[in-house]
Structures are given as structure tokens and as C-alpha cells.
Image 1 (cartoon, rainbow, N blue to C red):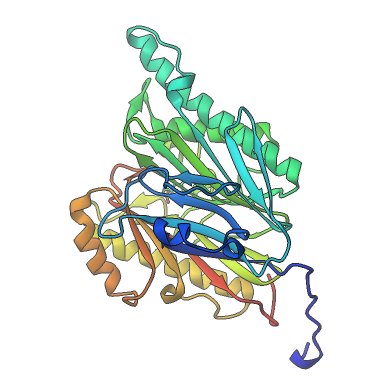
Image 2: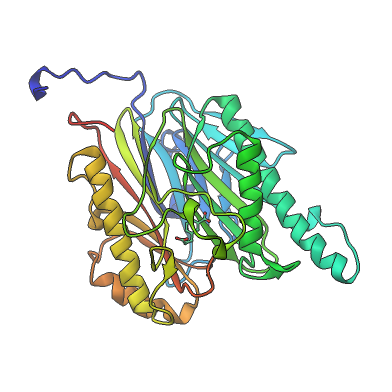
Length: 370
Ligand code: 3EB
């Protein structure tokens, strides 16, 4: 088709999903016209002190590192001209807000409220049971909301669990989380391979609640795998009895643009961690994995649409003392102005020192659509 004859259908409300990292003072001073298109706000170490009325506000509980003390992650639908709708579900736990095409939701669950007190061994098993129950409940509520609002496609989900690497009842908490996530996907009739959301799963400090937030869409996204890595949903069982459920990346076309969501990515080639103990090399390998995903995404849209330099990044650092080395390794590949948020978090394999997620945006296209 030739450009001049191609008719681009004009949706009534051409929403383009937009991510920004802004200081909470900046957010608080924005006008109502800006606020009306905010889908959700995520603080990092703690809930941000913002009175947002209708907008879901959550926090990852993983603290910011470096000098950006008050940053928040803001998801907005730019160009939307209809009022957004809100809801909450379950025992008041899941908050969500949506437009026609997209939905943002967040849920915070305090495991200790699900924990039956008991002595000795029983106490440890109760700890494992509370995590399983909390994860299952959270995912059940998420899928129920997606069915109800008809935003049936989970495209990106962020999972934050306290003490992700700690043992509970003989199993690592991350592995227990994987078991419960799998059960919830199955019980809700969701696919567990292929069309699964982009995701990340990180550890927050002891005593934090479980915090999960997500984006869902009415339209089916396109999932991207990494040719350098085994799909996580096909990992061998030595990484846990139940496999993780996530895609390496996800492409979503809305009426006014396409977003690329790159899952938490680390120094894994095939399914093995490489560069043990070398944080600079792990950072370089992680960027090579993200670059490989960008190649796959560009191939999927038949255009050179995404490049490393135009993404927004969140970098999870296991040991705060590694921050300098990670920044140095990133500065070799990225422009100084690249938006990057550094957070302290435990990565879900103990030998991983760094994990990086990214989001790409591009405006309306008259070329090929996904
Ligand atoms: C990995 O590649 C690193 O369990 O949802 C990255 C992204 C990782 C998502 C998840 C885990 C998850 O296996 C860990």
C-alpha cells in the first residue's frame, strides 16, 4: 500500500501510553487536565505522599539508589479525550483505572495478615502457606478484573515480594511464588506458555508487603522471545518445580502508537547465569540480551523502530556498592540523558547481581502495524 492512499482509521480516542519518571513534588503540582489521563502511579521504597483521588497509587517497596530521592513511575494515556474509569475489587485490595484500550491495576497484600500463628516447624510452613495464598489471591483478583472490564490481555506485570531468596518451609520464596502463580494462571484458564505477559519478579526488604501492579489491554499484544535465551516457561526443573510464567518482551499497538515492554532481563544465556561475581560483565551481558530483544521486536514490526538509546530503564541492583560499576558499564552503551531509575532489589537468582527492565514508545505509524 502506498502512503498517500492509505487510510488510517481515526479512533474516537487516540490514546498513546506514556511512561515517565517524575519527582513526587512535580506530580503534585500538575494541573487537572494532566491528572485526568493518569492511569497509575508507582512509588519505589514506600508509598508516595500524593493525594491522587481516583488514581491508583502503589509502590514497589524496592528503594531508590543514588540521588533521585523522590522519583515515581507515572503511566498516562496521552491524547485521550474521554474520562477514565476506576474500580476496586476483592476485599478492597485491587485498585484499577482504565480507558477503552488499556487498564492499570495494583494490589498490595500483607502476608502476615494471612499467616496463622503456630510453633516451630508449623510456623515455617505457615510462612510458606501465606506466600502461596497471597500470590494466588492476587492473581485470581487480577484475572477476575480483566474478565470483568474486558481488558483480557495481561501485557506487563511487576511482582515484588519481600525476601525473595529466603527459604520458607524447605523451598525458596521465589520458587513458592512460581508455584502459586502457575496455579492461579491454570485456575483462571490462562495460557502458561507463549501468550504470557512480560514480567519481572524482585525481592523487597523483610517486612514489606507483596506488591504487584500490571498493565492489561483489550487488544491482543505480540509476545517476543530472545533467541539468546531459553524461554523462561521452558526452563529446566533445576530452577524450580514450577516454571516461571513470563515472556521476554511484549509489543502492544494502541490507536496512537506502539509500546515495547522488555521484561526483567539479566545475565542469563540459554538458561544458565553467566559472569558469576562480575557485575560489570553481567551488566554488559544483560544489555546484549536487551539488544537481541530489540532486534526481534524490530523484525516483528518490520521497521527499525526500537533502539537501546531510546528506551527508559529500571535497573535493579542487588548490592548498593555495585552501583558505580553498573553505571559505568551502562554509560558505555547509553547516552547520558537516558532515563534510568536505579533501585535496590534482590534478583530472583542468588547469583544475579543486576537485572534491567525497559520500556519503549513510538508514536502513530502509517507503516506496518503489529
Ligand atoms: C530470568 O531471566 C531472570 O519470574 O516473572 C526475569 C523476569 C526473571 C521475570 C518472573 C523472573 C521473572 O529468569 C528472572
